[in-house]
Length: 96
Image 1 (cartoon, helix red, strand yellow):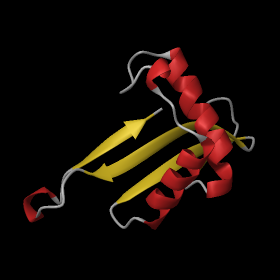
Image 2 (image 1 turned 180 degrees about the vertical axis):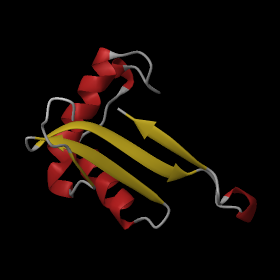
Image 3 (image 1 turned 45 degrees about the horizontal axis):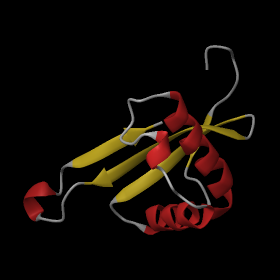
């Protein structure tokens, strides 16, 4: 990073769920430019663990986290849009 601190980009483990959820909720509180407003999010810790497990097991999507000093400071996700042959090359990318 510009300040010289290393930033590790890695897939999260289910044990990272509390920090991933904290980061998700914080970013949704700080901006209105994400896909949902903070008051619309009712994600539980178990929901987040399940989401991470599903993303890690999927062949066509992934979740990434940015870690600075061992703390998750951002997340990004890549997901396939459709299952049809003509749509296999298309996807969506989200970042917070």
